[in-house]
Length: 237
Image 1 (tube, one colour):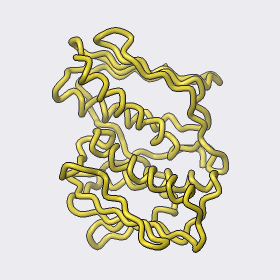
Image 2 (cartoon, one colour; image 1 turned 45 degrees about the vertical axis):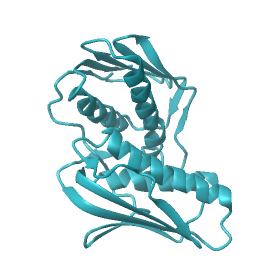
Image 3 (cartoon, helix red, strand yellow; image 1 turned 90 degrees about the vertical axis):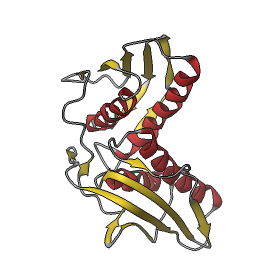
């Protein structure tokens, strides 16, 4: 697949049930990896990566195992249906870690999404973000990546630490954006910190085989943050 299309036209509010069925005798390490991916997806909804979509309720720790079946229920509001292609991509990436599935699906009311079927779509960015977005036109073979987020005002340290934790979820989400689905996305060496009280630096020493469409999630996260802490610029190089 040469790249992904971006779509957020269809949205859903209500209960989402995620079920992942493993083959018998699947080892604990494989199940834990998948559980962590599903939990990270829920945390990413709450953080704002799929803005304006969000979670209703106070916790994303809703992932349960019974025999070989993983079960998770989330209450979502105004969530782009294309977000579930990200969850599916996270699960398909697990196959590079020798994880097998009998099935994986998300039930959105009466609509059933097969999470192991690639749709070629990923969530779009907000149409007109209220800050400058500066993305490079070409990567020129450079597999390092720098993300800068500049706020209008200084960010308090406690709030800043929570934001760094949210931004770290993007490393996991990027795994759902392979340029070549036969090879895993490589994301490693991240350093995420406040360069100064107004600017976050997210430096990846390796960000390889990942589609830049994943940058749309950063735009959405910044839109969510901008509601309470105005942002001046999102820059990627």
